[in-house]
Image 1 (cartoon, rainbow, N blue to C red):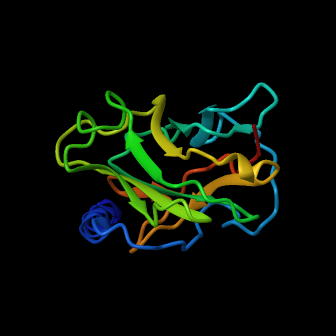
Image 2 (cartoon, one colour):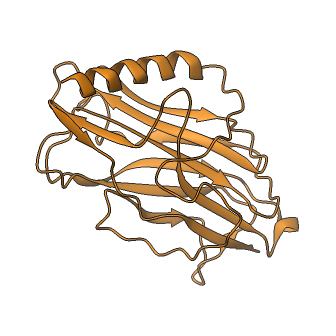
Length: 209
């Protein structure tokens, strides 16, 4: 119960501090944190959070220039109990200096929204200017709504960037897990306990026309 309360207070504090969308770029959590290494994109749907699909990707697995790129993220609850609160942050970055104009994040309606989490169901952006590195955070907490049931397995989050300029052809965009301020660690909580969910990233892609 204490862990759930701490998570809820953290989410409320995060929401109050996030409204200015100021620069963050602080990494951590379940991934590599953007160490400059180019990783292949190999989604693993057995992880708690995984990359379900990418809108704006070519048949060859590269990102198209001139259009918005959307990363669709799947959430799987295999904890054996209902999740009452959760936080997960992501960093979109380029190891070789790509800019992409803007970053947006959203919860897909009918998934992890207020029908499940009536206290907090929010997608936050930090440093969302598309300059080398942006951070987003998803936060959820409830008062009385049902929460995320055991066995839940749906695409619930979206992150969109772009469009990408053709001058960046041959360069790379990466997506990884991240801490986000002030205390947005990767955490799922239930009454009496919690866990650090698994993530199938990092993922990186080359940019092509």
